[in-house]
Length: 370
Ligand SMILES: Nc1ncnc2c1ncn2[C@@H]1O[C@H](COP(=O)(O)OP(=O)(O)O)[C@@H](O)[C@H]1O
Ligand SMILES: CCCC(=O)OP(=O)(O)O
Image (cartoon, rainbow, N blue to C red; front, side, top):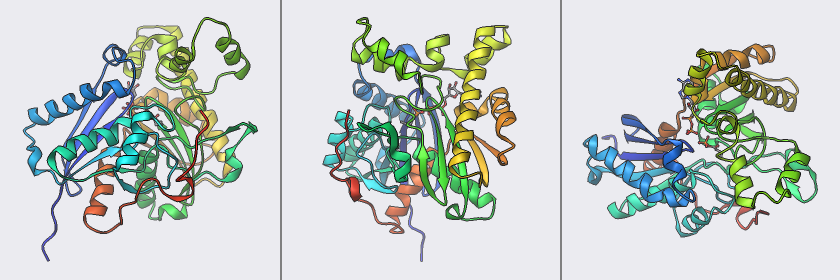
């Protein structure tokens, strides 16, 4: 029988970039990172306001590359802060669009993924999907306890890339993902460290707004009492404080840039503050990996470092020096999200997997305290 052929456009809006890919089945024919500098993004009041800018940037890039939109079979976007759901491929529907537009579980660039996919796909009369959104929730009950009864820990992380890279490493090791205990540190605009226990992410820091290592643009865990004092100092409103934690935290707050490549240049030029802060970011990632190894009681098959920051040789070395006593460290710089999006859509188009209907599972009617 002749192989079915599908052309899929994958769209991955991150905090500092929009990545796009065009795939013929699983074969990439175009992959492009459209970087957005801080000044450009800061012109927009909210992530939702960036929609028209990002859509035009995507369409211009496809046009420049000579991609004929009418040849597309489907568009797949990275899913955002929806209701918590199990992993899988979901068709973009009305409820999903509503939740993405209002930021049901918060605001993040990936909220635009499903919206951009839908808008581009519906003009072409083809389906739009999302795969493994940032709200994939497989936490064990013990991991949900925060330490204060009104606040529950939430699973918000780089689910798409963490799972895709973990599967790739399992294949390299000649095992199934479901057989292994892995710690995956995704280090991009945000940083999340996931505990993958036999194929389920049973614990992970909420990489969006206030847990775990600081990142190029996020504050991560900060001392709670001091944060409360800042909130009630009378100098800042809620949005300003949230912007400090997400977008203007981390490297941005100390060094004025979210670009680790620039920070490395500052260090090369002898900037001692830049060196200290950059090393501190690696130190906090290593600490989080140590904590993750305790969740697995030390039974760790491998530690995986991935995301844009994993290209930084010195940064990666700082982490490895602190954690390689736990398990072998495997470095997969960058991410595999576009490929993972395309493959997720393809599995459904080929009928290998059933598309899931949003919202689903035990969280379908969940309300999130915010
Ligand atoms: N070669 C490199 N060396 C060090 N850091 C890098 C390199 N390439 C990208 N980065 C850094 O990785 C971060 C972005 O990671 P990425 O995974 O692309 O983020 P996101 O998808 O969240 O926008 C930025 O701080 C960027 O400067
Ligand atoms: C919301 C968790 C995912 C995340 O932080 O993505 P970016 O690093 O792309 O901002």
